[in-house]
Image (tube, rainbow, N blue to C red; front, side, top):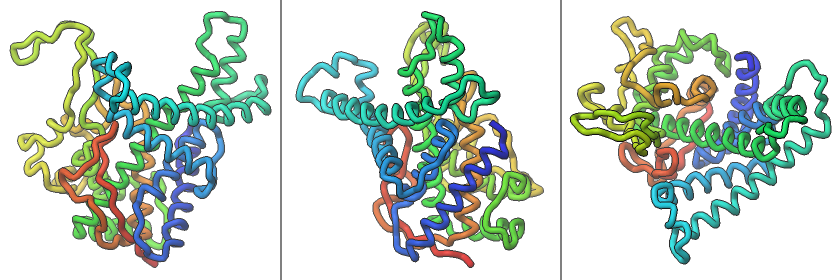
Length: 359
């Protein structure tokens, strides 16, 4: 996938996002309602090679199911450590498992429809695959006589499901954090808009080439990722015996590194609970892109595979929103810091705001 192809696809979503928000005529809305379909459609483009209207009933239902399952999975996390809990009837764990399974079956049917539609027009002789499903079907065809092949329809469905689960809620929630922090820090929003106006001029939408000219915007997005702590606890397993502060952690031990303990460390980030984009700018006002102890996408060999896509989406959507809208007052239960919903991702409590169009 070339960057230009991805950029064009994201900008198509950005244009419809501006249209959706403008049509609200400044009526308050929960930002997730308009942002999540955009993120979902980007994954649709990668997996399926086609986008859906934001009003499409199937897209909205898929968005709803994925969001529900992220919440349900967080509630059922103790089952990962104590599997017997799922077998105890009339408990929340049994109920959560049943609801999650039901939702997954509906998601799988939706994705199977996409695969079936693709298979009807699939041509194994085609030179280059047009999307993920196409590429998978081509490998499946190549290995059709291999009884040990893992390129099965079930594997395809689960792979697409993972793309949606990992690539939708994360981007949507990051942008919601950004909106919330900008509402609470109007001077930051003013600085962001001043920088954008000086670079974009009359242009309504950014391109990736603008990135280096927008250091304050980059610093603001980075501060959102630090303080929002989207994935504050990461599940891992030791691959060998490890000594840590005088203790031995045996091989194959399940561990949970707490990334927020680094992001909120006052030694590494002075006044860690304050929203300060300036901490990622040097004395000349240039963006500091490499900070060793900043790890919103994890670190090491298992660092998030989707980081480059996520950063591209965050930049293009963030600048689009700030270029085209000023934010109204905060309505609802969300405040920062601390007022969050702990799901698989760390999300702000639902809130509403109005988007006031900037001519």
